[in-house]
Image (cartoon, rainbow, N blue to C red; front, top):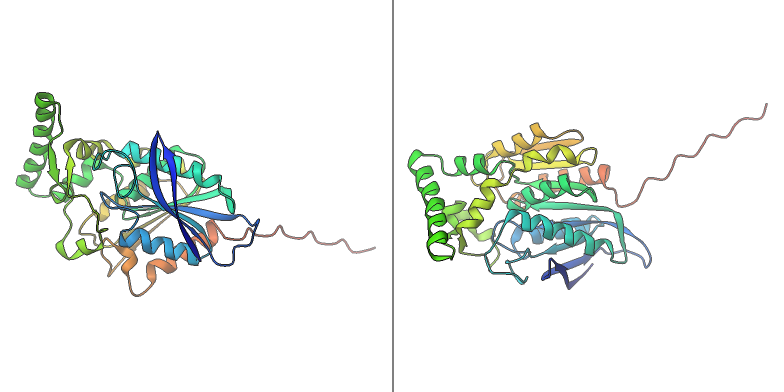
Length: 303
């Protein structure tokens, strides 16, 4: 197995990535590939993107995990994160990966976690070059997601008040109002260890506004007839489980939804290997490393 640091252009910005090449890949051989998208305000080096890349590489896929603009080692204004910008970064990453030797350009899928899962689903819906989508802890309706993440009337009022204050601050000063990360998306303290060491602490109010307006539900049906796999904890304390169910309800077949018990939002830390087994089986059926040989025609018997 080999890994190397790479970079590529996205709307004039330089994005940083790690390209994984699986063991056993022969010179001239073209393998299917997957992009790995990190979560909200973290980077390619977080626990989930790192583990996802390792799992997919071990299964025989070429893998590119990369930092979205404004995150990790990539260019762009630090913390200025907008959903549609990440959709463009994903499409531009696909364009770059498709040109790499050893990659089957017609069989590139996208794996995303949390915020990255919503971006993966959305990108699959609007970019027909995406061959398959895996969303791990995805959300499809920004308003609905935030409403459940800030469940009490007081919490919701405080959250909406922050956004309204952000609009007034921008109009008055021309600058963004910065909001603490966990005031936008709460994460239990015990789970914060899974974030990359360079995770972003504060975001402009515009980031939360962008998330409010983002609705993967509106485009998820357009992924079909390409395959979609939705993985979600049966009880998620970060991204509400109802969001995965909503995506499934808006999707068309082929779409598989797995709600897994006994795991938290960072599902790939499951020591039982259930999530990995689901991914491996699904990929073997929908994006196999080796294309199935065409069935041989039966020879006609002489009469």
